[in-house]
Image 1 (tube, rainbow, N blue to C red):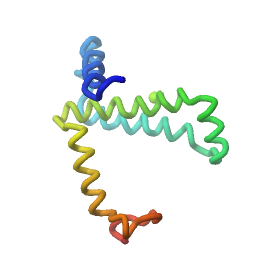
Image 2 (cartoon, rainbow, N blue to C red):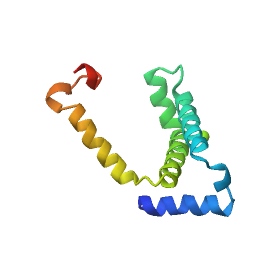
Image 3 (cartoon, protein in one colour):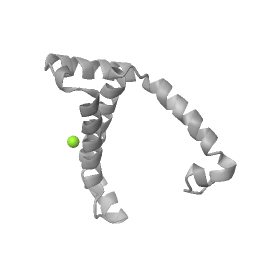
Length: 115
Ligand SMILES: [Mg+2]
């Protein structure tokens, strides 16, 4: 099991070996992440819950690949912008905890602005 930092280092080396930093502007990385997320969504498009469950059990690797593609671009983007993902997620979870107190939102899908 690799740590986040080990994976990030691997991604950066992969990119450096190919001299792809020149293409990895923040705008392009954000677009690439969104495009990969759309590829993930495409795997679900027009399928019933039952069809999705069957598809995931048949082709889990395809879903894993699209999730990985999305996360890889986000990891590189965060790194390039000097964002520590651990801190970013921790900080966002604190904000989410304040926006969505358990006693007000448990079992509800209501947006925090309407709680
Ligand atoms: Mg992809």
